[in-house]
Structure formats: C-alpha cells, structure tokens
Image (cartoon, rainbow over all chains, first blue to last red):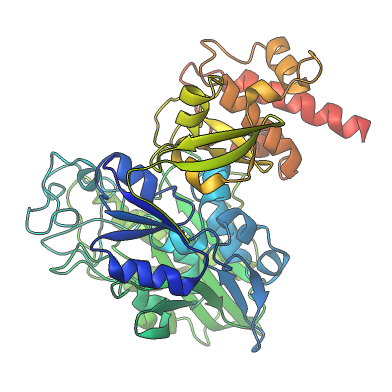
Length: 338
Length: 164
C-alpha cells in the first residue's frame, strides 16, 4: 500500500475543506472497497480523510414521509431497519444478496454506491485499463468477459457496476444527497452513475470534493409486489452475472406502475422507462413479461464469453416480474427459484 | 480534527476485555495490528482482501473482516478475537461443537468460522440449515468442511433454543 497522510474529521465542513486542499484524497468510511483497492495500488490517494465521526449514520423518516438513509449507516443496519423491511423490502433483499455478513457490517450506504467495478483488468495493474489509467486501453475487450457488460458499454470500457443495493435504489427512484465546495445538491439515482463513454475513469457524476451525505427513498409502501432475483456462479457471496429488481403497483389486478432495474449487465443499474411503460394498465402475463424483457435488453451486445447473459437477463426479468406480480418475492436463503 | 503525516497515531482498543494502548501507522489494518503488534495470531490472514473470512473478528459485537479495517479508525472499540471466546479456561460452546463435529481439516479458517458463527448466533437471522449456510457464506473453507461446520453451528443454535 502506498503511504498516505491520514486525517480524521469531525464535521462535513472539515471533510470538504480537507478534500479540496489536497491533490488526491479519498473519504474513508467502512473501507471495505477503498482499503482493498489501496492494497493493490489501484487507489493511491495522497490523503485519506476518515469521515466515520460525521453524524451521517441515522436512518429516519423525512418530512414528506420518505426515508433518509444516512451515508454512514451500514448496509447491515439498513437491511434490518424496521422501516426498510416493512416499506422497502426490495432494498433489504438486494442488500442481503450482496457481499457477506462481515462486509455488510462494515460497508456503508455511501460507500456502496461509490464502490468500483470488479473487472479483472481494473484490478490487474499489469493490464491496460482505461478506468484505472485513462488512455491505456481496455484489457477486457478480447479477454475474459464472463462478468462484463452487455448493455451501454463503449469501445473504451465494458466494466459493470457490481452493487446489488444500487439496483434496488434505481428501481425505487432514490435520490442521492451530496455536499460539496459549491454547496448541497440532490442527484436523481438514475443520474448518479454514468455510462463509460470516452471517460470510463468516471464512475459517477460527483464533482471533485463532493461528499455523499444521504440517500433518500420516496414516500410510500413498496412491500406488496416486488422481487430481487440474483443469478451468479455460486449460490452466495459472489457478484451477479445478472440481477433483476422489480417493483410493481397493482390496482384491481392490473399493473398501475412498474420499475425494473438490472444489475451485472452495465456500467450502471440499467433501466428502460419505455419498457416499463408497456406494463402500465396491463394484466400480468408471461407473454407480456417476455415482451418487456426483450425491450429492456434491446441493443444488448455480448463479448463472446458473456453472450449467454443476454438470454439469461431476459428470462430473469420475466421470472422476477412474475414473482413480483404474484406477491412471492425470491428468497435470499432458499436458493430455489420460484 | 486529527492529521498524521508519516507519524503514528495513538489508538486505544479493548481487546478481549483488556485495554491496549498502541501507536499505529495509518495504513496498518486491524488484522496486522492484532497479529504483529499484539501477538494475537488466532485471526488468520487468508486472502487479505475480504474474500475469505479467515480474519473475522468481532468489533463492538459485530463481525467484520479485520483485514479491511484500518486500525486508526477504531479508537475506543471493543475487539473480540478467537482468543477471547473461552471463559475461565472453558471452551466456548461453538469451539466445543467444532471439535465434536470435526468441523475442520487444516484449521486455518476455523478461528474466523467460529467468530463468524458467534455473531450469527447473536444476530438471530439464521434458524434453518439453509439460513446458516447463507449467513456463514462469508467464511470460505478450502478443505470443504462445510457440512460439519454447518452441523456444529446448528448444534449450538438448537441447544440455545432449548435453554431459552
């Protein structure tokens, strides 16, 4: 690990001041991704700013009846919070599908959305990687691509975003609250992460020195019709080949509102509003779900070794929609797929 | 606000019930602090990347991967390692169950498995065999002793249920 200066701050103002005063700095929360990347010299900050003492650990209702998840609340505490399990069980399910109990105990909500890709070539400092070293090339294209993107990739980067939590946050239309040198702002979740384009080193739309302070969930009870289905190379403790978050609202047996987000297939959680709109006012049916699945994955391109993910994603979308419509969400402990 | 350039920072930890005041460089992980400075070698360095769980310890009662936690961020924390589980010379019920069920071969993952299982029992999420497997999935065993590990955890889980 490259040596660094260490700073422990007690206020967000100090954190922002320290971040803008230093050439290359990183905020340290749970450390489960950052420390790992620093051990491999992928992240090499000159200054590490420990933000764990900032008062950002609460999970509380907002004035409009939504829920604010503090950036420093752990993934584990978020997944078991009574208001999360009762109103937003999709989020709890997604979190519990990710990582391990140990990692979820340390990993924070702010850290989860800022975690980096697990692309093998990003981790291999002997390989070219436009995300790690802009302009060096992409080792993944033409390489081992089982875990790589089938949607929204560019000629410079085919990495995927690894988070499960973010897939649920995308489907729930969450908002990311940030503080920065220019003040506070709120970013719609769909605008938070970005596609690689010709700047794959930028994972998200945070400006330099900005700090995530909270994630807001919209008001409402989202517990009736949801499911999170994650497909991976082993039954637990592995990143998604494909995951699907489905959140439906039914009225009189018809679908009144539908949100579908995919994980493991793109540089960000993948949503296609036009595909979701196909469900509005319709009765749930396997034929319709298949049609929606094809629309969500329209334009999907494989790299060879991951071609299978296109059909896998389509079937997973249809299956997850069926589970959500039936009010029978996928269990994260019983691995049989209903 | 505290800032450190190449210097060390003072950190006080309560390790297995004893206060330990140490000076650590900011890049030292809890695992390295435990093993190299405090000479508690029960927690093991397997992958050193949070992928195997051999380094699992309890911090303020919660299981974490000690290899990914910088020690300087833990000032004032309560740390429990495998060395701190037995009481008054008696093995913890989990340690005893691991012996009775032959829940290891090489033993390298065992301290992490047992610390993880200790937290699993306290968390209360796992009741069935399938749930124990899921909630123990952060601890890999390269010898493949999973069946017996699950047996050992289930034994203690069920004996706890009977005494409650």
